Image (cartoon, rainbow over all chains, first blue to last red):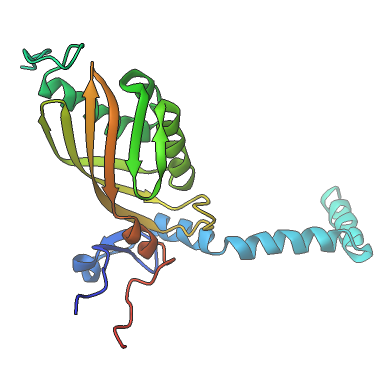
Amino acid sequence: MLPFPQPRYLPCTDCGASVARAEAESHVCEPQRQLEFTVIQLGDELAQFDDQLTAYLATPRGRFEAWYAASRRCG
Amino acid sequence: MIEPFDREGSEGGCSLSADANKEIVRRLTIEPWEGNLGVIDEYVAPEYVGHDPSTPDLQGPDGMKEFVTGYLAAFPDARITIDEILAEGDLVTVRWSGRGTHQGDLMGISPTGKQVTVSGISIARLTDGKVVEEWSNWDTLGMLQQLGVVPAMASTQT
């Protein structure tokens, strides 16, 4: 039976870099790419956080917190 | 040295030499992905048709630009490198590799941050120094596997 087609390259699961499957074991992640990859992977979560924060700041308690923070900043 | 014209002209027009055609196709393969869409206006004929199984036929320079900008929106750092280029008569064949990081929406797939590498082969037909028709086949399955949309490993159980 013919094997299912396999790509010659696959993205590293830690940093997303395209790595030849034959060289996967010797691959070393670049910290900058790893950071960018993590941010993109967390994109939905970050977007949800923004929505939740905006909603919270619209509540009476959130408005008070924002006012209090601003007043503390201004001394 | 590049011979600008072949002695055997195409029907009704002048035919550039194989080397001149190769240089045109080389630029068209690489430069649009570096942001130079002007090269498409320069070297793609108004009657251009691009055949690619992954997409409906591309029509004219605008069709090619739409294809490139669509993929650049998904892979802003996409770059193509030429592995081999051959020419005969009015045809130029390119074996190429492409690499880019998935940072924008692609066919409804949200950005994954994954870098993909694909390869392909394109054959271009030129008339009067412009590409009039092109046939491309490239590893769309591999791209989707690398993005994790299609499993890279499939069960062989029946």
